[in-house]
Length: 177
Picture 1 (tube, helix red, strand yellow):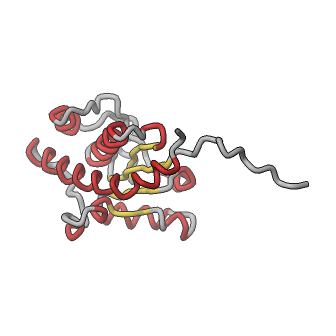
Picture 2: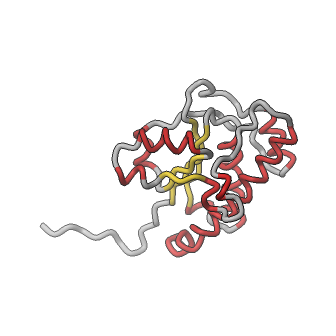
């Protein structure tokens, strides 16, 4: 029996990206919402599946840190609905790109990867931004004040813009019309 080919008008699977930090209450929720805004501004929200998660489980189910929510609000984003979740090794099969916010997350995610093809899905967020790549890590603002949260927001936004610019042409090409 011959395999049946999918019809040419079958909708493309959304490109799935997740952002991962330590507790999923500061940096990764910022990245998720910034990336969602970029996708919406480009009219590609239907062609992307965007989420965030943590390497640790100590905040699972909790809201984003209030300073994160405040920083997001100062930048026109609503983080009030966010609830922290933990990345699990089986999540690799759901995602095309797993974006680590710092090198500790990168190491953990690569160690959790079921195989080399999954480890290849992991990338540092700042690696997408030539102006910030040398820094490697987005600093954790958890023990800092509002000014640091806003500075971290700026770093994440700059890197997300660069990441979006890199994947946007392929997403547009594969996006259903």
